[in-house]
Image (cartoon, rainbow, N blue to C red; front, side):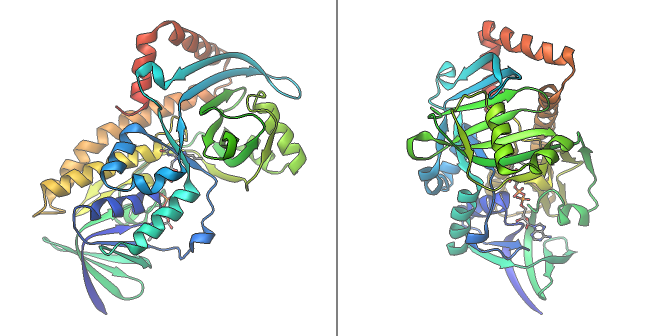
Length: 395
Ligand SMILES: Cc1cc2nc3c(=O)[nH]c(=O)nc-3n(C[C@H](O)[C@H](O)[C@H](O)COP(=O)(O)OP(=O)(O)OC[C@H]3O[C@@H](n4cnc5c(N)ncnc54)[C@H](O)[C@@H]3O)c2cc1C
């Protein structure tokens, strides 16, 4: 049995774990990142994309991560919300409300990058960072001491550390190991994600199109002539499963119909990836010398681009706390301060995303009518519209 030292151990090498590892090394501390899957760069398959909002971009710039991602980004300048009715070959637009970043004196709301490209870039950076020890293995148990932890891996390696960060996703081993309960709101919805090529330019517009069920959202990706976008289509599980069972021709026709011809003729250029979109929130985010971040702590439906942006707020708080508690990393005071700083913010955002999600997928006539009235009200009531736009940005 061999024992090594690391100031911080991060369990999970997904987007949250890798971003957290890279950000914390800027403070000159040593990190050990433990990832259980042994996948290569070429094996990374993720058809999702992430819209990084301005506060997240500012933090990623500060920690030197953004310059590596910035070549692949596409700005989101306009969000267009559309109500549609059935038609053939395309559904028809009933009304359209646009939110333009210029209205709040910004060049853009955020920048979109495919998760696949982001993961490949981050993994290269993590593997060559001298302060990060990236280990493909699994934690089997944790020994608690007053001043430190001993983390034992399946390969018999032990790590002596001051702080453990659980960034190991929805089914977090670290959260379960600490018996932290999770509130799950299962709304029996699924999301299917894929990449499309389209005839018209996207003009940096993200379309969120409502019909029945959840929204069909296109998010512009960087590409030649602005003709590629990522799609997230949320609907009840039965409808998404039916969609997944269609042949290529039928699927393409459904997608074209749902897009209201906003982007011209569409073809699907990636695999289809589906996931459940239930919301999940841990009762607390900390325990002895342990902090949960990312989907291990909070998982949201993919609406309003909040998920990973909330995680970047977690990382920013840890970054500032490690600076504050540089001589007592992982102390009770430090983890308690993290819990207070993050729990309320996450609860407020989870509640608002859940409400938005309910409004967005509801087929109830009254709720749909309220949504339509709300959108036309927002067009008239500019100050409220601007306030909502700023809240959506996380400021
Ligand atoms: C359809 C969809 C669209 C989305 N769009 C957006 C968006 O536009 N903007 C946004 O901000 N967010 C978005 N999100 C959310 C965002 O994608 C997630 O927040 C993010 O990918 C989750 O990252 P994570 O690292 O926390 O978890 P994961 O990606 O699940 O990573 C966890 C990692 O931990 C590893 N692991 C698990 N258990 C162990 C263990 N015991 N030991 C070691 N390693 C372990 C896993 O192998 C995995 O690599 C979206 C989500 C969905 C589903």
